[in-house]
Length: 331
Image 1 (tube, rainbow, N blue to C red):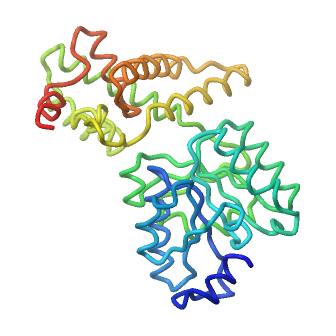
Image 2 (cartoon, rainbow, N blue to C red; image 1 turned 135 degrees about the vertical axis):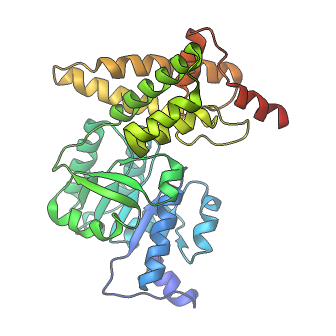
């Protein structure tokens, strides 16, 4: 018995519209949960079938369940029951293991006509492998990494970079802009990488260190950033001035440091394979790796903007700003 049949006969609240695609969601981390939440709210508003979701820790989806989304007992059951499946996974190995669990256990008939959209940021080689494996089963794969930290995901303001077959992209388009994102950039079969964001963060962090050392002050610099460089640069600046770069103990970072190292590393590797060099990305990843060493020594997770703390230390300042110190003292 598949999941649709189960809910149809055993859950009286379950309603299924055969004319609408059934959407599944695998992965409810710091990005996946707010994205899936916005999608479920949208489906509620238009009377479409509820999301079926799966996460290794299924209780992570309790807030989704309260919105009428339906938990799946396994990723395999989810894929069997859904037409469009979004993935939000931590890294390349998580993508591969998830595909192992749903592909190796199912025959080709279970995948024909399905669309799998991966919102994770993984190496192009991993996406190409996933595409090949799914195509062999009759499914279509879309690489759709997103730009923005978890608060941006919660606001439904992510920027989507979409690479995949046109007919498959058309199937997911109604759920992107205005639902989970502020915009969509269509890039054919290729992907851009997140090293651009890391490079911008490096520059903003360096500017803040200079402002503090020179006496200009962070408030004045942030005012300049807001007026001259717009909302994206301002949001990066605010991650530093609000202390988000170094979350309080027990708090989750906006954007995980380890994932940033992974993303920028993919960009550098791709450049090397293409005969190019990303010198700004190389500087950024060095500071990110130094921040990881600091994170491990302190036993606390850091944000992907924590290169700021390393730059502060290199300039003779403490890793934590006065605001962070005052906040932590109150904890």
